[in-house]
Length: 422
Image 1 (cartoon, rainbow, N blue to C red):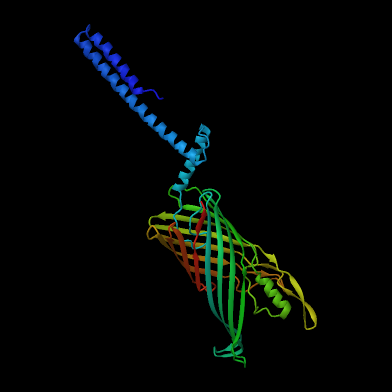
Image 2 (cartoon, rainbow, N blue to C red):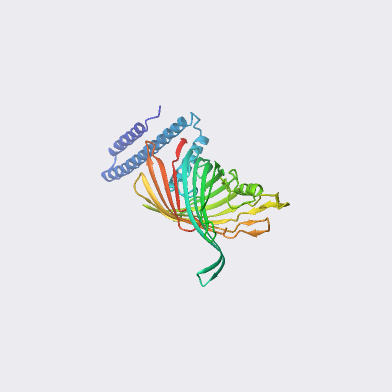
């Protein structure tokens, strides 16, 4: 049992008072007054020490209880000083992570929006994306006189492209600052092309339909949150690697060349890009309640690949068809916008994304750059997030509107992440 410190101090104080009373009988009044003042001063000092000891005892008991609770949660591990020190370090790390928690924004892309997974948490995110593009192209080949008379051909083409992508993404927190991601998708594409040579005697429209469906390109990624400095925004580094598991459109076009010698319209569409790519980027978020300014800058590096050449008989002679080595070019990627917290359950964001692609280069039949392949894709994005259900799982909706000729007219994406392991 713990000794009664208050009883000891009281006994000591009583003894002092008794000794003083015995001395008072043989002392003069001035000496008595002086001794009483000294006794009172000692009494006050004793009381202060008793109060300090009581506070220290209370703090010690509180710390011991916390250690015991943590030991119970950790499966009954020991409470030695080494263990207590480890637990304290973990608590400090968790506290720092909470203080540096990124504001939750509607997820408008793989690198912008959402929050990082804490250590040990596994989240699965199903998503559906719909893209629609309608393009009308007029090609003039010939000689025009006075802006009215044309010697040559006029070709009018109308193309409508639709793409539906269903994907499943898994994210896992390796640490409180590092998150890993794997994404697999299933792609279904449909192209309808209507062409009419205006100056041809046959003015009937020619319709070409092409479709494709299958596994898309599998992606893996890492996201790391850097330590936040005072008055600095949150900084997150991203690294994504995309495979070529989808159907290669260059292989499909090469097969069309070998079989029919017609590369303009293939009956099948690719579900992937046909190339491996690496995409590093840096995302920043500057919170200013209830608004958060965010943005990202990145680079898309696509690895060139040899698509091969194949022999084909043409007019009784064997010729080589195919593309040879193809370099699809790279891209600079920018994104910036702001998010607004409407309430505790929902938020909205407005952003603009811009991707600038360099020209594609092919090796065969002669090394050359593909005219028109250096394109700019820009779109305005409105994101909305709302938490639903008992566990408040977020549902993210992103609606994109193309602002450049090469961008899809409509881009709608729905994501719903949910936790499967804490």
